[in-house]
Length: 173
Image (tube, rainbow, N blue to C red; front, top):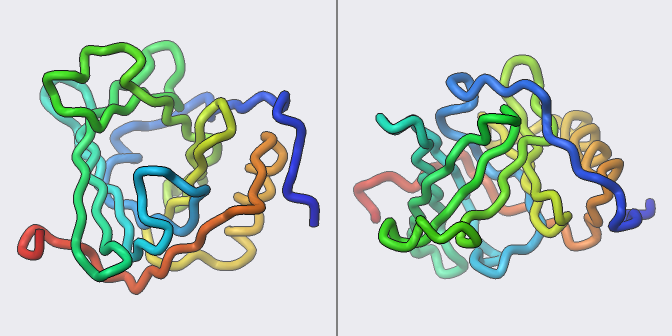
């Protein structure tokens, strides 16, 4: 199967996203390589919670290749004009004001029950498949990855991290 598409293919986010329903814990089922994340990281989760100022607290956790727990805290700002789009920064709070320091975080596909989500960037560089559970039925994963291909994502370097269902909790950080 050909995993490449022309880079000109436009990425589109979902038109409607209920942020309240999107909040909570997500397990990373797969992703494209990230320079800031260990390719062999496992038990990767993202916890989204609403802050008093209307922004979203992003708490990413995993175990690295050596089994050491890791955490990254970020802040996401919803795009008022596009419900399915956020801008995320993991820089220290004192530097988050810098406009180019925020990355696009677009929800590209989500099921009606908010169990599975495909998230990516409009430049086709980053892509994640997220689930409320540590495993995804093969047919669901195939459908979401097909949606990514149709939006022009090259999945030839797709990473499926080990997901045991265990989470990195505060006691081990």
